[in-house]
Image (cartoon, rainbow, N blue to C red; front, side, top):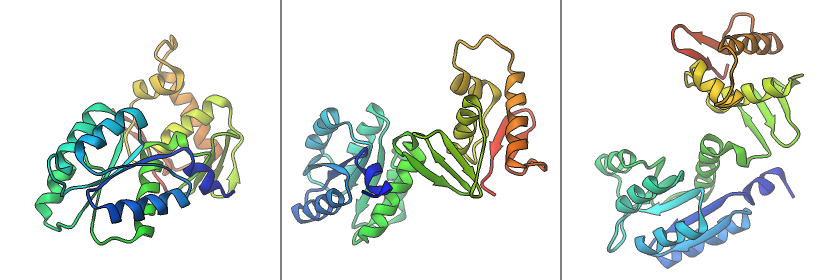
Length: 231
């Protein structure tokens, strides 16, 4: 079994569409890829299934009788950490803006490519549920959480357990500025009683191991914290 197939087995996808042919097509394709799949034909059924199935990804049609996709998206986002990819025959910018404003994470107009849908599902998992992946490659970084191995530009890094967790946190939130306090809470824990300058010490160590002498990978954002860039 491939790494991708092993990863897919951990991921639950809820399909919501009032067209049986589309549901059948998507369910068959995703099951063949290894995903755990549940399907609903209307909004109320989708919300009920979400309670018992606890999906990571929801593929959600906009135009449905009764409760439409916008209402379902809003309700799902209030209840659980789920990634929503909306499908619709509509192409109006206003509909896309409305969906995104309600919390949708992505938007695909019908008809769509199944290969593209797979790529978008994988992107959502990488961004929102990276802990589900045994191995994940993000830019020049590769991390194997099960083996506790990190590679940077194909070079394996010799990291302590804390360095591993810190770098993983920075990589999985690349492009975002993370404050020292946020890093302490996530990597060291809420009950850490030491000084926050411990973060600076570990950042310095990571820069040495990444050979990041110019601080172009892990950047210091003055007065705000640190940001990892995929260079």
